[in-house]
Image 1 (tube, rainbow, N blue to C red):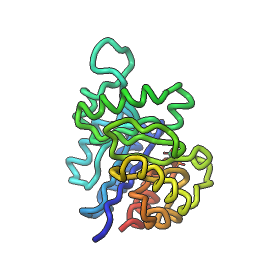
Image 2 (image 1 turned 60 degrees about the vertical axis):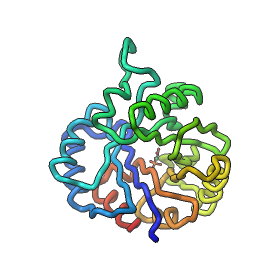
Image 3 (image 1 turned 180 degrees about the horizontal axis):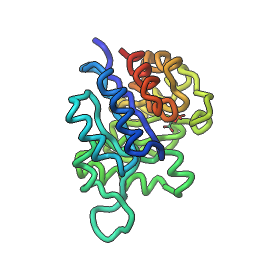
Length: 222
Ligand code: PGA
C-alpha cells in the first residue's frame, strides 16, 4: 500500500493576488488526483478567499491552509484572524512556526491556545516543532519537524536524521501522529525525505513559491 503523504506550500509573506492566481494557473492543472497525497497551499490571509475560489472553479486537488490563526475566539481582538472566520476558507493551519516564535514571541502556551481554536472549528492544526523536545499540545495529529538551521538556508537536515527525529517525536505521542519534515526542501531532495519510514510528507517554503518547481516537488512524491 502506498503511504499517505502531505506536500504543503508555505508562501510566508509573499505573493500578491495576481501572483497567487498565476501560481494557481500553473500548479492546479498540473496536479493529478491521488488518493494518498494531500497537497496544501498556505497563502497570506488576504489571498485565502480568491485562492479558494480558484481551486473550486478549476476543481483542482488542492487544500487551502493558513499560516497562523488567532489564539482567541471571535470578539474584541483587533487585528486577529479568528478560526471561526477562517474555517470557511481553510482545512489546515500552520501553527508555531519558528519565524512566529522568534519574531512575534509566540510561546508554547499560545500555540496550545491556537491548536484549541483550530480544533474547535474543524481546522487541522499543523504544529511546527524545532526540536524533538518542543512541547506538542494535546489533540494534534500533524507535526512538522523543522530545525532552525535548515529553514531558508539551503542547508537541509539529512533525511536520516529527520527520520530519526520523527521517530522520537512519534514515540512520545504513542505513534498516533504524522510527522512532516521542513527546511530547504526542493525538487532535488524531496524524494529522499518522503521515502523515510517515519516521515509523512514535507512543508516547503522558498521552493514552493515557483509554481513549476512546486509541481516538480509534488510529482517527485508520486
Ligand atoms: P524553507 O522554509 O523551505 O524556505 O526552508 C520552510 C518553512 O519555513 O516552513
